[in-house]
Image (cartoon, rainbow, N blue to C red; front, side, top):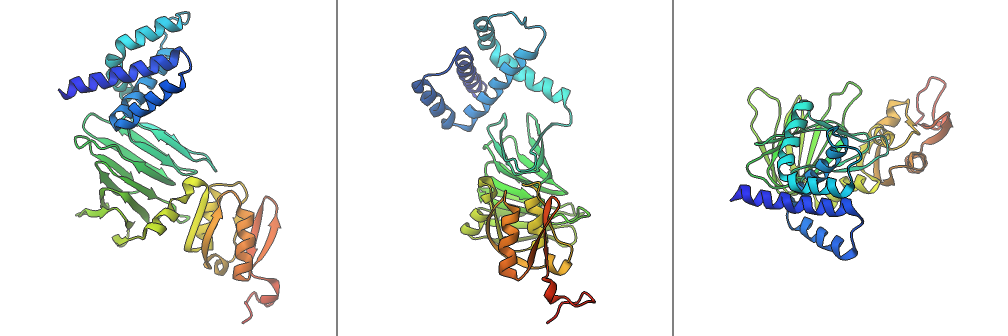
Length: 328
C-alpha cells in the first residue's frame, strides 16, 4: 500500500512538472499546485525529484535535442516513476561523496532536498548531503545552517559537525560552527526550534543528550556537551541571520568581527586583544560592518580608523602611554 501511495504521489508530482514545462501556469493552477505541495512533505519531496528528472532529461545524450517539448513532456510523464528511482541511484553512484551545497560571502540560500526537508544556509557555509534508502546523512563542514526536517521514521536524519552528531526524525534545529578559533577548534552549538533531537559527541563512550524545543547544546572537545534552556526571544534573535541581521548578546568584538566578515568584503580589524575581548550587545545589519564599528566605538569608548579596504577598532590615542599601556 505504501509503495502504491508513493507511485501515486510521484505521478502527481510528475504531472505538475509536465504542466509547468509546457507553459506558465494560470493563477488557479498555481494555487492548486501550492495547495497540493503544502499538504505533505512527501508531496514536496516528490515534486523536487520530478524537477530533477526533467533537468536530467535535458542533459542525457540519448534524448534527441530536436525532440519537441510536447513529446519530451509526454515521455517524462510516462516514465517519471521509474526514472525517479533510477536517477536517484545513478546520482548516488556518480557522487559517492554526496552533494555539496555552499554559499558565498553575504549569500543566504534555501535548499529543498528530495525527501521534503529544507536547508537554510547562512553566508559562507558548506553542507554535504547523502540520501540513502534507510537513512539521511548530512555533514556541516563550515558556517551555520538551519534544518527543517521532513518526518520519516524509517529514515533517521543525522547531521555531523566536527565530531558532534545530531539525530532527528521530524523537527527543526540549527547547528553553528561560528565559534571556531584561528586553529579551527571551538564549540559546536545546536539550537532546537521544534521537535526532539539527540546530540552525541565523539568521546569514547558517547551518551546522547536529548534536546526538546527551546533547548541549546554546546559541544566542546575538552568538556563534552552542555545543555540548557533558551528563551524564545533569544532563539529568535539567534536565527535573525536569515533576515540579514546579526544579534549579539555579550559576544566579544573579535567574534562579532569574524561574523561580519562572512557578509562583507570590508573587514573589521582588531589588533589589540584588549579591544577584541570587549563585549557587545545589540542587533545590526549584517552587510554594514563599518556602521557596526562606529556604533560600538561610541558605546565602548573606542576609535574607528578607516584603513585600506576596511575599518580598524582601537583604543583612543589619548588613553595610551608611550609604552603602550592604557591610562586609568
